[in-house]
Length: 438
Image 1: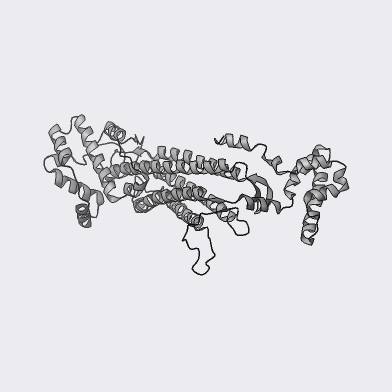
Image 2: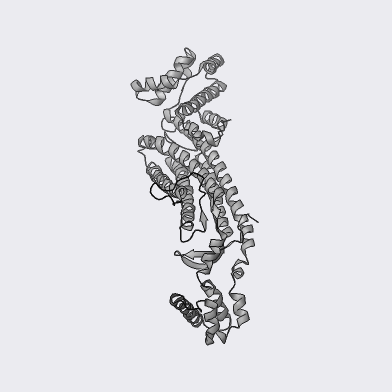
């Protein structure tokens, strides 16, 4: 069984010490499998298990001369095991057998932490969605008032999006849970496939069905691009909350703690700094995804152009996304919602958001779509003109009632029914049920 790690230990998963611990675990599991198959004497295996150890400092010292991290590691471990058993260490293996199999363990452990993060985030989103299920607000397209929605529906959309993030990461976790101990070009020339199967099973991995010297990097690119896509979703919602916090909108606001400062020059400022930070960090993960994609093309059975890149982008991406998910959860939990401002902004459109409801009602009365559209648009433009002129009839329903062509088809009672905000919320509950928030 591989060791499980908590969120606080994401950095530890990718620490040099932890990496070498996994290397040692793989080496000993391979020796155990070889002993079970009659190659390594039991007394030698016992000596290996009893004495096998490494010192990070000693490995670094050896690497300065050897210029090879795996050989430095095996040299140090062999020093501690001693003869004659040390001859069996790394028997029939190539460096990438250890590197890539350990890499898979690290990615799986990281994915487990990130999945926990995503589930915690969805719980916070779900609480906010249910709380504001029927809190009315204006929906916007192109940044312009469109039709009413609810803040709960907006949050339910976010809930659904991060549900997809969970499914994608679960799929990527499965994809990367692949190890290999098939040798220098993947032919298993010196170790039978059953050795590989034994070690991978102990590490809760699947053996790669076929490999070169390395596990193929499209697998790793899938993992990193999944992280980048999750970061893009984080950015999408951070941007949404930033827009909703603008002074002239102010429908939601990031929590602003007592003693917090917003600007060195302007004491009044309460800025959406968390959303801005998350937006910026998403760009880093996208850049890392590009690097992972460029790692896919290697020369023949392998080169090491991918290695230096992976040492940076995988620890950074996993640690960074962990931070971003926890931070977004805190943002959502602490988000201040202003229903009164939502109502105020909804009223700025003077009821014009009823235009489609009236359009469709006129079509049902027998008008062509073009006739109905022209009629409704005419009343809408008069509403805007009245508003800009400061007239008392700056209201869409008033303009509709005053238009004789509309009056021939729709009564006041019918317009009263059409021009109400609740008309738009008839199916809110069914949407909540569809995303699992019923």
